[in-house]
Length: 165
Length: 349
Image (spheres, rainbow over the protein chains, first blue to last red):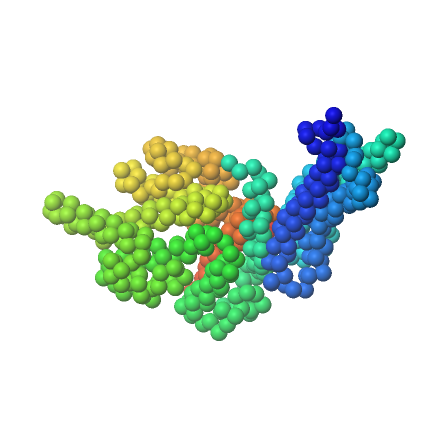
């Protein structure tokens, strides 16, 4: 009998999880960067001297895309898919898929909100206020980092389980 | 209905650039202190010196007469509308700001026709329709101005026909009021329609507040001069948060109670009954509500609100400067000018 869940093999599930993390993280980052960059561009078109302070605000939502990418790479490495192993048990593969979800969804949502927070914080820079504008979008980052940590811990556990088989 | 996150994403991308530019420009909006200095300035020349370091310096340089001030402030406002055109806002929103000048021009032209006077010099070049078109043949006017002008002319003809039947004559004042009523009603209907087309709730709320303020001023002034309800009711505008029926019902009350009733309306919260009763404070008090709305719009991080609030604030700034500069030229004293000082977009209280 074929080892599958909902018609998908373990490797299929693992790749789906890895792909989702990379894709959703990338989408979130693209939207977040677009949002923050639009506002930053508006400010820069009036005052080019603020580029240095606005760049980090616009770039910060890009980290979620990196977290998604790291997750995808870890799945590929931890479960030796890079080495050509394509027979991961379905139960393990499905769990790998589940382990990827925290990063996939948190990266998508937090990058979008971080872009909005960055756009709002750009107003602080525009108004020449001494308050550190970077702090507020950085607070949003916290939850994407926590999701990445959770995903990595789960993947490490599943890697041990897979090696024990 | 779109999920809130999707709407927020769409709005932030659509208005992000515009909000950024406005955030940078907000730093140049005149603050309370600048207005105080303008009020306290001993001469008009000193006022110009104070403004020379602001965005208005280039437009008012060398101004000597009230006409120079008008033209200078017109150019300053033109630059604001020019900015709006560059921001990539929805067409209906860009049009919203200029179309009010079209209606003001049409009203001036129709009134001039009634009075048999010349009007070109008093028309604003800030509208969407060139002045020569506004002053030309009614059939050549673009919509909706042609429809409104025809409606006003029909209303004037009906007034004349009615008077002829009665064997009386229509007063010039009645004719001018008819023009005002027809044009104003059409203007607010057009503004509400543009606000809906722009899909900006904030713009819609601004139109509703403007209607409420116009109705409140009309009701208070009519009550003060002892006009009958039948005379006032047709001139009340639709589209406000305070329904016309409620205004009409309150009109039966004595003036003081009417002011109390209006001040207790949720849409007008913040305005005091005594301000509505004081002739010299009525405009300032009602303008303060509009400023409060602009400040609320400014506090929105992303969306149409900060952009709309900025443009409205610059318009209010021009109105305020007109009062202070032309008031000084006309010889008004410091206290008289201070009494006409409105709350400002960026400031305390």
